[in-house]
Image (cartoon, rainbow, N blue to C red):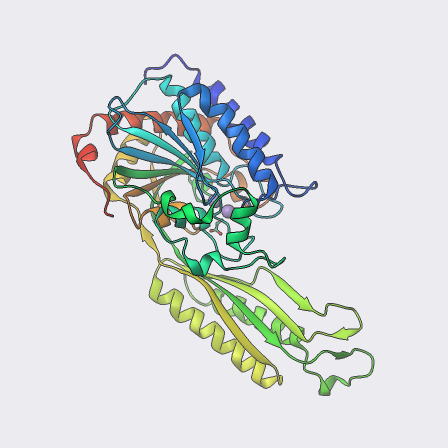
Length: 421
Ligand code: GLV
Ligand code: MN
Ligand code: MN
């Protein structure tokens, strides 16, 4: 690879930049940056400060996605989109999502103004985690034309709708259609930490994603009767929290019995939520994932049946809202093969794998060829402030990205492909 840039030093800068962005948070005690929260603006400002000297035009689209175009030799040439998400879970690490955006910036730094036969659009998606509105992928859905009326009217726990959040950030929901990808796109590339232990176990810095597991997200509410905790005998209660607890352990038991299935009740809201009051209502989130869509949807139905049986046996009622049913997605075979070749050029052994985590790439894949490169995650720890990366792996990811850009620059097959829209 020919460059005058010190890649190891650049890798250190990438990590330092991710840590800087992690300091832009809604919480003082840790990183939390949800859809169009105030710290997202600081994040946009900081990344723009890095991008502008690289000859890039930066804008924020109406869905709050940061969009920056690095021009091709010919201004009419199609573009490759490179990026990931800028939002985080509560008490997050510094690398989930953010690393993919900062690495995209680093690739432009390595190019040092050298133009390719195709342009590069760097995207920092405004929302991927689903924390604020219970529905993930708001940013990438805008790019594929699926930030629809139903999603715009969803509300957060404060009763603020997605539409209102967009307006409050100074953006115009009427312009969301303009955020949609145009037809001059060649593909989407996302760097992301693996968020699991596989690459570390194999001793490999980089992985090549072949497919992303599908996921369902639901809201399940048990309703009983709030009553006095001191005066209501144990056999005369309709305790929504005890019912929810029984169901949570059933979810775990069922998921353990099905190969490849993961099911998580990750959040719970108890009403009225007082020590001396039997819970009258409990709202839970359920997240179910499997690489086979038929297994996933069958198991969601089974888990809901369990909830209904538990509710009936306890004199409770239960209702559910489906928040997401996202199919498993295959990554583009051509781009995946190109990534494998680039990984080998770095002196690494590529490992093909399925991602259990959801990614913006699965949404972009609806419209354009999409591919992902995973970086080894120390300890397999993610969605946790302990999340980290190795400088060596980040350097390998940069090297791999530069090889890939050059391979694609000399591939007529790549440059003649058009988007499927
Ligand atoms: C993203 O972090 C996911 O929940 O898959
Ligand atoms: Mn995440
Ligand atoms: Mn992520």
